[in-house]
Image (tube, rainbow, N blue to C red; front, side, top):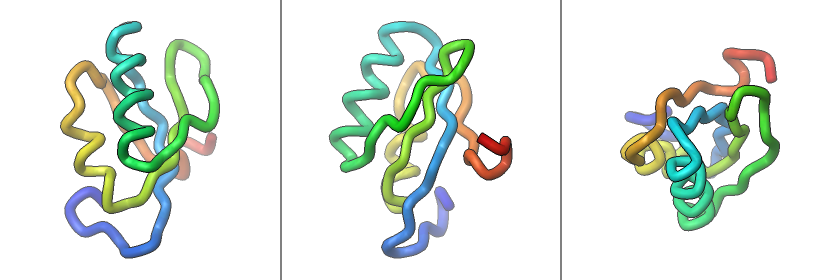
Length: 75
């Protein structure tokens, strides 16, 4: 998905920011990439959706401890 995104596909991801500052930066980055925050999870995780073509840009964000697909985890 990161290296070979599909055109017109949307990715649903569970993202875990390291702290509150990273959480704020995450929200800004997702919005700037045309995505949205879908819901808050326990222990600081967030479910976001965005175009697969934007996943690589999201992965470059500082302060993110983990990014996983929602399908992998069953959220």
